[in-house]
Every structure is written in C-alpha cells, then in structure tokens.
Image 1 (spheres, rainbow, N blue to C red):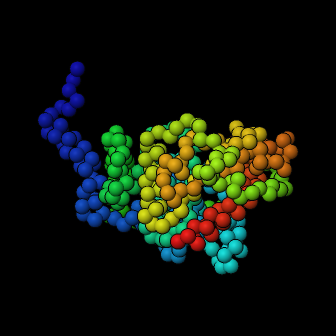
Image 2 (image 1 turned 45 degrees about the vertical axis):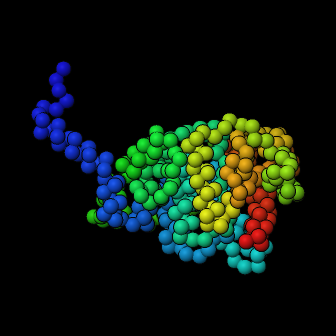
Image 3 (image 1 turned 180 degrees about the vertical axis):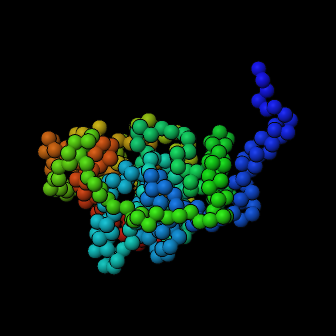
Length: 349
C-alpha cells in the first residue's frame, strides 16, 4: 500500500493546515475576530428567520415584554401579533412581543439565540417549547455552527460531558472560516428578506388542500392551563426522559433567565397523536428539574378541540406543526394564560 503522503514535506504541510483550522476559533477569539452582529449577518434563511433575528438582537433596543424563541413548531403554533395586541390591551400601552424562529429543534440553539438577545435587551417573559417526544438528539443543532463563536458565552458548557464539549468545539471549527472571511468583507444580506410571516402559505394536513375553519376557542379556566406543584391537574410528566445534552441547555436557559430577572415559560406543543386526550403529556417535570422561575403550561387536546367536530380535527394541523386554524385556536387559548403569568410576575418584581 502506498503512503498517504509522498514526502515528509507534504506530511508537515498537511499537519500545519490541519492545525491552522483546528485552532482558528481560538486565534479569532484572541485577536478580537469580528463582531457578533457580523456573524449573524447573512445566515441562510433556511436555518431560520435570521435576518429578523439579527435585527431584533442588534438593531432594536427597547425592552421586550414576551419573547418566543424556538423551532418552527413554536413558530407555527403562536400568532405573535395577536399576543402583542391582547397584551397591549391588558397593559393599556403598546407591548413588545417578538418571535425568534429557527429551523429544526434544539435546546442548544434556543439557548444561544435567546441569550444573545437577552444580553442586549431586557426580557420579562421568555417562552419556549418543550422538546417534542420524538426529539432525542444528543448532538449540537445542525445549524449551530453558524451562530456560536469560541469564547462568546462563558459558562455555557460548564458541566457538559467531554464528548458534547468536543462536538461543540467542532462547530466552532466549522464556523470559523466563515467568520474569518468577515475580516475581508461583510456577509451580504438578501434585500428580498423580510420579517417572518405566520402561515403565509397555509397547507392542509399531510399535503391535503387547506380548508379554512371558523375558529371557536373554548372558555377554559386559566389555572387549568398552568402547571401547579400543589395539584398536577391534567399534566402528566411520564414520557421518555430528556437526554443529558437537552437537559443541560434547558438548565442553562433557566439559569440565565433567573440571572436576568426573566420568567421562563415552557409550552407543551399540541400533537395530532394526542387526539381526544384528556391530559397534557410531557417528558419530565421541568419546573421541578429547572428550579425557580420556570412555569410549564399547556392544554389537553380534548379541551382544546371541544368545540371542533371530530371530522375537522386534522384541518388544524399541517403535520406535527399546527396549521393556520390550529395556530389561531391555540393562540387564543394560551394568550390569556401568558398575560396572567406576565402580570403576576411583573407585580412580584
């Protein structure tokens, strides 16, 4: 078998090149590198609404009343303008409610994006979605390399297993060449990119034609939508447990929220597989695991759809994502609970 390299010089050259790329994240950090705003600039919209996310982190400076941060499951479930309108009515002033949507699930991506915003702007309520039952990945989010830089978030990896720390360092390495390129020129931004639009092109369940329904939200007691440690109510936390990677970044998110005086609200996302269920099933008792300043909320499928004929149930979903009908229904149900949590937390501060 012939050797991998034909000469010692080529072996040394390859080793030098490999060392350069493996240490580039550290070198960029030591030399000051590029601005964090520059890193966010030009991220592909396939990875999420990053043009809008960049604007909200680096160009806007007002306090945020409610921040929704998560994957498309949360983005499809919540009508942000509706929440903003209802909160404004309750407060008697213009409220600021924003949604930072990324593609694909990952508590690590949620943590880094929400942390970047909360380091720039005061947030009162941070709302995230509980990891879906089918989401078991213990690997970094597939787009995380676009967002993170070595040395930016001290303490973020403390307590994480060595294997996971190495995986995240690999993301630093993967993202470093793009960051180095910013030293030569800024990343271009597509002028056609605008703020995300909720269900701009509605589709029916599993590719079927979309059928618009007149949404009638049931009148539900708000205390039935919010988990209370005194009474479990409809909440059952007996699903497949979170893995250590997921749990680490949820704990870091809760820890960072507490440090910044922010209430963390974790929502259970409705699923078509829960059809007719009288309970809110989830994976682990997160308010207990994550500590003070964390609230869990959701609605049983049977109660959410109690005014909906069973034959129309699937018209409220796209797949695991809620559709336009479902988003309107879920948002109308959960918004009063979020406003109540906001007011209670604001009065306690």
